[in-house]
Amino acid sequence: MLEGKKIVLGITGSIAAYKSCLIIRQLVKRGAEVQVVITPAGKEFITPITLSALTSKPVISDFFSQRDGTWHSHVDLGLWADAMLVAPATASTIGKMAHGVADNMLITTYLSMKAPVFIAPAMDLDMYAHPSTQQNLRTLQAYGNHIIEPGTGFLASKLEGKGRMEEPENIVACLERFFAQQGSAEGRENSMKGKRVLITAGPTYEKIDPVRFIGNYSSGKMGFALANECASRGAQVELVCGPVSASMQASSPNVHRTDVESAQEMFEACKALFPSMDSAILCAAVADFTPETTATEKIKRTGEDMVIRLKPNPDIAASLGQMKKEGQTLVGFALETNDEESNAQAKLKKKNFDFIVLNSLKDEGAGFRTDTNKITIITAEGKTEFPLKSKPEVAKDIIDKLEEI
Ligand code: PMT
Image (cartoon, rainbow, N blue to C red; front, side, top):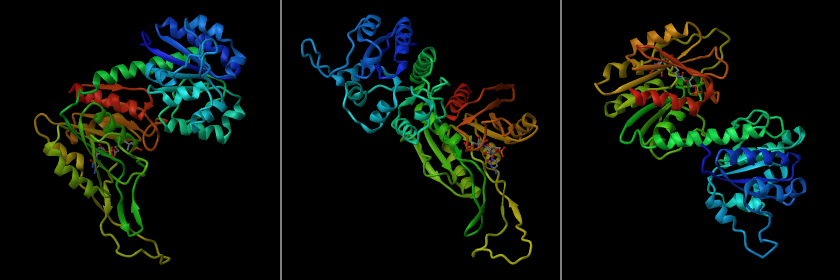
């Protein structure tokens, strides 16, 4: 996966700088071309001679070559690279990267970089845990950089590492995984071109009075991940979503979003859209019941018990299951707390799904609000279990299955 890849390796002033030799060796062994850019402090820890012997290239540190005054173009480096890896990345460099303090060649190269950037922090635990460092790392993450968590070897979505730089082999493995995923994503780029997909996401709110509702914990993360995945494969997505936080945003203009509040509103939107769709994925957590009446004024405390009578909501999935025509695919979710598989099997049949995605609240990291999920895909023929993954990765597995049908 790293064969022929051009990597800019940024080295900063940390005791872990010696480990960058091991990173270079592993990258070169896998066929990558490595260009080192080192900060002045980095040179205090490791000599450019060692690094240039390992990379077979002169090391870049200054804006001008001391020898002949040649200008080192950070812009050219930014265009040349397939990835930039800053390892080790000190708190100081992380702060400068986050705030654009371009006072050395490494930072100017970073600011000119067109390729993905990976950052492997290296510092003591107190420095890593300090709110300034954490805030800077979050800023860098928000700018689309990948943080390689110290002590875990993962590209972090939540920062909870231990300060010490991740081991060289794990850093290289992160890069390999990234390029492997990018390779398969490129293969899938247009695999759903021309397809129209309806996706429901988030909770529904069932109004009791002007200030209260019956709702649930769905954040919309799973549904938005599905919408983004379909859009990234070229599909046109109709995303019907219940009330989700303002931070939930689809990442592609291929996603057209309809915001609704209640199950009845979601039902109306889905019924209107479904006939023109190739498939629908029903990920929303829809309230099965709604108050029989909604009070027009805020209900006041009387000191007595209060009873709210509920009536059933439409079952969106079952209705679409009945409307389904030849050539349309319908995918449902089952969120279970007990007898998971048999409940999911029953919903698969009853709602006329082509397959159902089971997630259980018994599994840690699965279900509502988490950034991860653990699913089993169940069809009439059998089931496939998947390990705990990030919701965007789970979405890939689900959409791979959809494309298989
Ligand atoms: O949004 P997140 O925080 O990321 O959480 C994701 C999730 C846990 C909400 C998601 O993964 C999930 O499991 N969604 C389905 C939740 C649910 O309502 O499951 P259910 O077993 O009650 O419903 C079965 C299926 O029927 C679902 O596809 C549901 O969308 C659909 N349904 C249910 C009731 C109803 N009135 N109409 C429906 O269409």
